[in-house]
Length: 329
Ligand code: NDP
Image (cartoon, rainbow, N blue to C red; front, side):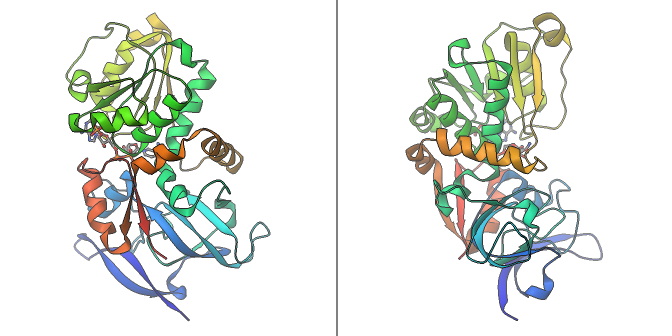
């Protein structure tokens, strides 16, 4: 039985959580019909919450974190995959309830996997990862609402982070006038390089606001939540919409109904974890078609497997720019 290296989060009898590297064997893996040799993973905000224990993301101990992975199928009892196939996994509770991708090997359910689109290398697949695929879902929600590039400016918050960077690149590539909000003014040139037409300070959207403020944007992709999301809602133009996917600034929503009932504003909730497979495939197809590979390269940084725990601590402190790719095998 081959042994392999993995990150393991454990909890002691007193409830204290710790994370480190461990050597495991296939017997330690959970049930599943596909065994995968992991090539690449990434660091999502949720992985940072899992490693630091800042939110109760991990609901089974010990846990291998890592909500995204790309790898090669080694064994399969699933009719959909055979040894040698290159597969992609995003979400499905992996890294939370089921052992995740920060390991050289994983055993997952074939129903959770999709084939990595041929247009993407393993590095690119993980540079997108859950963050990028969520950004595409947000963009598609605004499109379904009927917001097009000529409708007016569109706001992206947390723009220098993972979801934000991909959302800026996608929206700009589709022709939208993108306003990028960031708490890191030093990343202004980076954001303009991704296609932002304007860069504003995160502070403009913080602090207690009015139920209705000056109408500024026809749409928004928000990763921050909290007071920022409440303020954004108060600034959306008549019949506009917000796609909300994150809580980097807080879980609460101290808003009023005024934007909904007086301006017809719509708030879309975006979840990436349990999206049915046909929707995932459609979202990845859109990414393949619409995401500029040069911009993806500009937002991606590769790190070694040994660096992943420190990187996870950094992401929840807002220190990571764009997307990290973890080189595993
Ligand atoms: P990142 O850490 O890469 O980006 C988050 C960004 O938010 C930071 O880079 C920073 O951007 C901004 N930010 C951080 N802290 C604060 C704060 N206190 N107040 C305001 N802004 C802040 O994370 P991701 O992009 O991967 O994820 C963003 C959010 O989306 C997270 O909450 C994550 O859990 C959520 N998410 C949800 C998914 C879903 O399925 N619904 C899927 C993926 C992510 P800047 O420096 O530019 O201001």
